[in-house]
Length: 122
Image 1: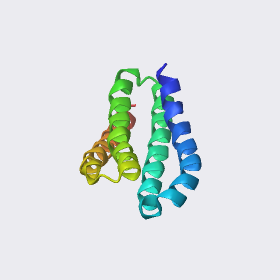
Image 2: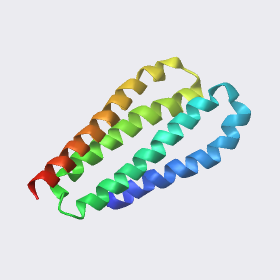
Image 3: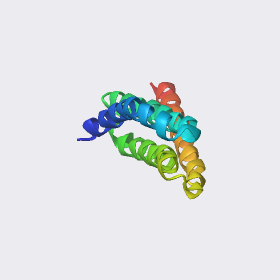
Image 4: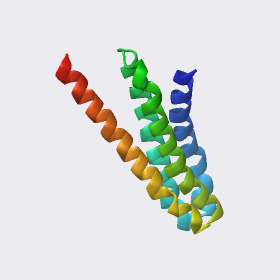
């Protein structure tokens, strides 16, 4: 179940970028760069979730939900708020973006610390 969610998020980011590009460039040219940023981080962190899935096959199962939750929450807050801003134009959504970015940065930092600690003890 969780494996499908990770891959779905990555594939959805790619499809969203491809399909939304034509619409956004034509209909919302002033917010196109915001949309590109959302798609980029969505796709990168979708691939990060696939990486976590691969690492969990090596015995990281107890940490899987923690890292998955951090990345998922970060993508929803960061990319989701940028998508919402792109579609609506309401600047209230942009205030959520830094929280999502901080969540993503903390998730990567904790993942790196966990990897380094695992290598140290093996």
